[in-house]
View (spheres, rainbow, N blue to C red):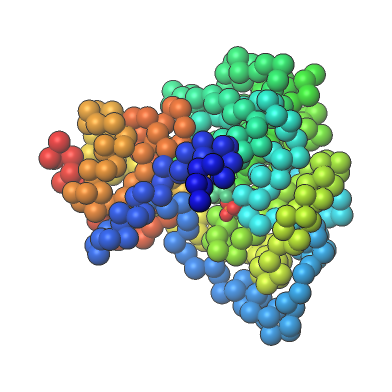
Length: 387
Ligand code: PMP
């Protein structure tokens, strides 16, 4: 069979993720240290795992309602009110998804017509562009700048808007830069958006992981509630990546459309995970705080470490990544990562994998033990000495 003839042109055109290759190489090394993968190194807190196990013991092994267990949706709404002052109804405005990833896919698929443009600030998480392209949407990348602390400015937004603009993705707190948007920054963007039909897909998966500044959602800015879809999930805040639990909240009409698609494509999010997620929402605030304290210590350690070795490093305000500039080495991001992994067996990810504006930077994830971070810096010093 000629599969090139059979596979859709679209999927053939989607580039593979720039992250994957480093894991394949690393898998062959015994002493490798990975600061590559964007995943918490903590176990899911025991009481949350226990709630999942208990649900299995009770025999809760069937589908749940399409939109998710009503107890979970109620818990999500209480949590969003308590933590971020967001008002959503459990019935009609909340949909439980398979990770934030499914929520993003649903939002794009329910909003876009072929040729519609989606403004995507970069560097950012790798999935937005490919998901948009798959449904014949057009990603429009807007580079955020280190001199603006990797925030999206109203001027940059305005310059990217055309009559075909349908969605603005707001990927903050940002993976990979660690940039966040303050209330004033969001208000300035809102000023540009008022009077347009542009929807905001706000990826708030790192909302709990900010350092020194509480996360503000675009949905909380005057007039923005009706045009914002909030994407969130359990992977990062509760260290629950493998449970595949996320949720979306937004205006009723949009959540109804997304629920319809979710019903056909997914049925319902994993039942065991939903029971665990209720426990996380109701009794997990302290776990978040403990993990966050730990990340904060590692964040400062790594930023100081990179700076002491002569690399410029923006101080990340959110998520769990450091994004140092490696231009002074004379290497491209990819050369830097290839050689660092080959010579010193440490995996970091080229900034260029995260879209325009990422070249000249590398992403190091600090969701790794202090022992590994210390060893990674020792190896980095040795590596820089060979250049
Ligand atoms: N958004 C961002 C910014 C991410 O970094 C990730 C995971 N790396 C996701 C969404 C997806 O997370 P999940 O599907 O596990 O909720």
